Length: 175
Image (cartoon, rainbow, N blue to C red; front, side, top):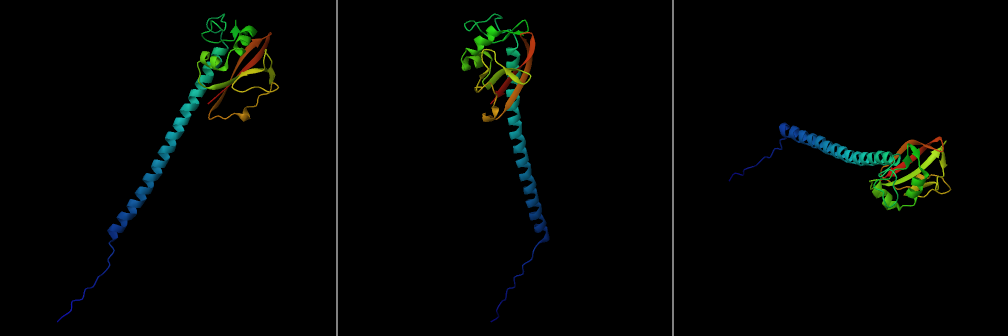
């Protein structure tokens, strides 16, 4: 009786090796593309939030240097807050504004964001019935925004006239 012997030869097909290498390289390129695309989308979304905060700061600062609606508003008649009369800061309106609740001021300024408002001249805060108003208090008329917890922060500055001098209205808005 004859025995059959089987001989197994392991043959490596060069074409399949190339196919596996191509597949791995393609998978790596695809993965890198997915990672880059997701980062781009996340950055684009955060830029949208910053743009919204910036637009809100510009709008709020524009409202504040206007006369408001109606132009001779009181806390009972206010539709939109404005702190000037004839392009000059009106201390009566500033006092009325400071005496409103913070949430009411956000409503009349058409914002959902937190803010801090103060006036300064030569980098010193001008105390107009108060040092400032907003989401944080000003201790000893000093601004310290380092304690804020925010994702986006915008500073808007406008100039107005107070007691025949030009002063700067500073508005910080954050999310």
